[in-house]
Image (cartoon, rainbow, N blue to C red; front, side):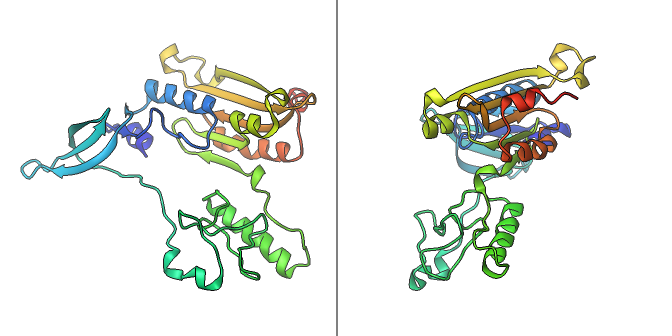
Length: 265
């Protein structure tokens, strides 16, 4: 949203608690690339800011935001509007799931296994309120279809393969990612099994732009074993969100780096 407002010409400030945006779940290479593009082409970045209070000036109607930064309060004023992106929390406590034997974790998420089974026999859960970790509408729809196939369609092993779900972030520029990040891959398979290939470049769409006006594309492959099977692909740049679905099919089918390099267009 900050990118949209900035692109429309509004003076926009993006406040975030950590040193970077997207601190969790994304490959460090992509986060670094996004921060670089935001610094060059995006809104004003204000890192390490924990919000404390909002106050509206009675005479001007402008809003001031007070944040805690480096242990001290700091007030920034003059805003016409403030958008607070606080995330979501599942409202499962009112369901009294414990009485049905359904376990939830400390965040209120329903605990499920790979087949959407809860801790109570015959009770299933899917979607954003579960521990699957993908709060995406198409994912919940797909999981529901697989569950119906298993329960009523005669496919006892039908389930959604969460490990191969492609995810996009409509940042500026957009992000597309599938599979494991480099840290996650090293943790799962060991350092000796993992190699990475990465590149950053400006596409031909910006060939006539000055250097300061070129939006970079950054691409990273996380490869496993001597065959260099792709276990993670992460890209950021113009149209990365649209390209990801094609990559997802290839990676789900077990593509290797050699397969990618042998595909000439």
